[in-house]
Amino acid sequence: SAVISQKPSRDICQRGTSLTIQCQVDSQVTMMFWYRQQPGQSLTLIATANQGSEATYESGFVIDKFPISRPNLTFSTLTVSNMSPEDSSIYLCSVEVVPRTEAFFGQGTRLTVV
Amino acid sequence: AQTVTQSQPEMSVQEAETVTLSCTYDTSENNYYLFWYKQPPSRQMILVIRQEAYKQQNATENRFSVNFQKAAKSFSLKISDSQLGDTAMYFCAFTSSGSARQLTFGSGTQLTVLP
Image (spheres, rainbow over the protein chains, first blue to last red):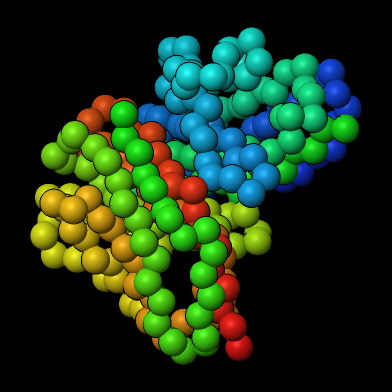
């Protein structure tokens, strides 16, 4: 299994500012994933972060808006840049634990942009 | 691209009764994994049960079991002896067995267990 610590758990931010969300795992993992969950919706993948390479973004998400860092095998950050109220969502990081092909999730960050 | 469909936005069940949540998916792959995740109000995503597509036997975890119909691309979750703590949003999810291991989620089913 994997224990994931995600910070902050929630924040209220002014529009136009940026917020960086941290994700710390208690073991080394190859792939980390960032998801967005808009109010009352399902989870949508933002990007996949591999250590040592640039993140791979899904359609509709761009690096300028959601820059991601992955400095080592246990840590990643997601920044939500130049925020607008439409960015109000829960953001979750996830890791896959092999060989069980099982994904573990952080507690999520509830972001409200005002 | 893979898609996952949950056609029941909300369901309710009496405590101690049995309920079945539906999920269908679409993929051209032969090897893949299916999951049911539970998200209570705390927001924590919790894995309930997983199924490997190459296994014919349906997965079971205590009160939770699945009915996996590969040909029909159906993956339903049965919760027996429902408990109040089972109240949560339930998501069906899919991942391929290839190198792209991200999860594709269904839209979710809000389950309420009534006392």
